[in-house]
Length: 633
Image (cartoon, rainbow, N blue to C red):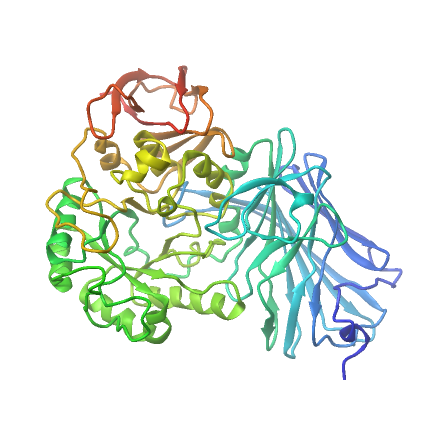
């Protein structure tokens, strides 16, 4: 029989703290003093507040879950213990946007119970980092439990505006939080509280729970509530994902600190990670032997590391009867022939890796067979396509599929709606993922500049970059923008020629691309040739969502810089004070220029730079600029 609280369908953590000896609030501050999290007991309910540099960024907000099978909760609930910890360390990733990440925080673990022992114990773990705040729930129950909903609130100040999207690859719009209405919106969620004050709300370490998004509270006009995608069930003790709050005086400041999500995940679980290799990728779109060999030769010439065969190599990806253990070209995509094993062997002889796409229909029924088989062929990675995401069942399945791939020495790219929450720290064979409105959607720079400051707070994003496809000129902006974007949108596996094929590749039949998307040997391809995909340091020099941005990334003693402009012509200025003051540099600058007589109309200019220099430049509507900055010889 359901008890009183179950019959109402609501079980709120910490219903009442009646014991006089129990503390009524707990405060946790970051090591640098910028952030403060305050746990509050008011009117018999548990709340929290969040502060950044003394300003309240999340107002009094409810904590809790709604349970369908809650055990009896009496009125003697109390804080039974507080454990405090300080951590001051750093860690080196297998790859990243930096070569070292600081891991500095103060932590309080607040334990709850009751005097008569009738209440299932639980804990709230709170961390205050120099980069943001995070908290998670830990249940110590020994019996099965079902969570119907999460009640965690994020109460924002009046007039707060957010950049929202209703799905991972959806349009991003700026809207007042109070006007979100009945929409359920994506995370991370970037919010502008006031001039020069931004907040980002998110989720970290989502491994075996239901995905969280946000919906507007029915009772508070500017409060967002965690919205779980389905019921969550556990047979014993469990821990929720982290709920994260970051802040900054600019959206770029928050973007620079996006490694907070990685910090909240477990360390690398792969003992030997030497086989995990970032790199640049060209997609083979003809599904033919000749096309594959042409891509390998192009990869060697232009210093790429991988080629990828997309959907169709084992049949119709949407047909449940298609067998991913066979090489059976989909006739609706290619006439063939495709000797895939020959291409893999040829690629291996040239030092080029091969990645294969496998749709979730085959993965769900053949995963344990496909992984070892493709590894035996010499495949180095798999792109998981159209995977189910959201509910607990599929969240658990997908992360198990990443772990199984690691067991077979295979790297992974997850496409479509999946957005990262930092699991690539624990399993760095998870190289990248989509969950992004990439070049398949023909985004203009305004869209990309929204993506940069929202989606990219979550981590690496496979933007499916193209260069010679007609959509670049007709819909997206400019070719210099495409160069810049490859630096600004971080992905350890960076696809650079999504719709393009080498000149000696056969024409596409019915699949991706068309007969005109041939790669032309234009001078600016040297930018892609030189560009790495992982970095030693990252600086967001300026920017505002949807309008403009400049990002600089360091590799060794060189820097690569990208600048994008949105819908309005803009004057820009760059200070090069991030350069070594004791070094003179040579910079190659790539800009859009209608006077250049090439297919892509990109001009190259070389100049000398030092850390004392400033550069002023103008960018037109949806134009871009890229730079390679190296020590002068």
